[in-house]
Picture (cartoon, helix red, strand yellow):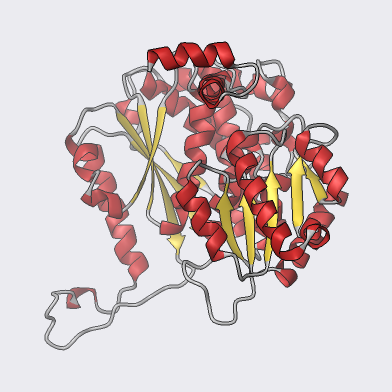
Length: 440
């Protein structure tokens, strides 16, 4: 089971630990009772237990069809519509294709506006068997809408409209929106983005589960891990690791630790850090408040960001994800002559070296004035990753309420959209466009 060790970070706190835990328990009650702001978006909270079983089976069936029919699955979405799936797929699939591997390659599009990227993608998939999973509640979000239009056109030119429709899977609103209407018109198989689950909390819905299953990952194990974590947290209200994590980070924030670094020691967890950044940044960064979420890949970034973390401005707290057992242990053997000076490690495996780096860095950062907590996973598998995803979601809700914000809205993201629409000349934004062009 996932564990949290905050013992070496707590001495940095000036406020009493019991007092902070009490605040976290009060915030957790808003979450459990649905009495806090944003309560209409608490559908993720019970999702591991209460989900649409019929749709879940359709997800599995569609995933098998994708695996059979396609060399490439292009997942079109932005933010919560792609980050959860990308995090899980990156963590649980081999870094390099294995011989005989039949899973389709999962490629992501619609998460930026780059003609170079999209042009390269269209060229790459030209002669491959392609399926599309377009994910958008509205169907009109600019970045994925542009990517989907161009990808759909390319497929229709190659395969025709009918065969293209068979290869498109739409994850969208249950009853309304441009993408839902198009899916009905064209006959795309469609899945639901629940009304009460915000995008950044949606990884355990069809938003994440379809591409994850198509990648060959056991979504039953992923859901079971989330279910186990949910039960552990609910069985210990106010005294669980999510409250502990929320209490620690809010206590440190009040002492000027305004940046939290999420560090990992497994390259496969890079996109878990990206998902976590959205979850906490979009949930807490409002009303002039919030902890700035950053992520580093260690030991890689110790040779770039390590100097700042160790000796820079003391505004940092750090949370480290440590994996105890590698999926593919690799031993270090003795070498005649010992030219690289590594024979002292002969007989050890790389897990031992990685763990030594983790613990040595942890102590160095503590000595440098950085509070460091440790999140432990016994293994990096679907079960434990499901635990980690649910832990972070639940703790985010508690932490946001402790901070005094609504953890489930994102009013600030509309500002850039309005300006972009105005500069693009979208109908209805003409006056705003003129004003912006004068400023530029």
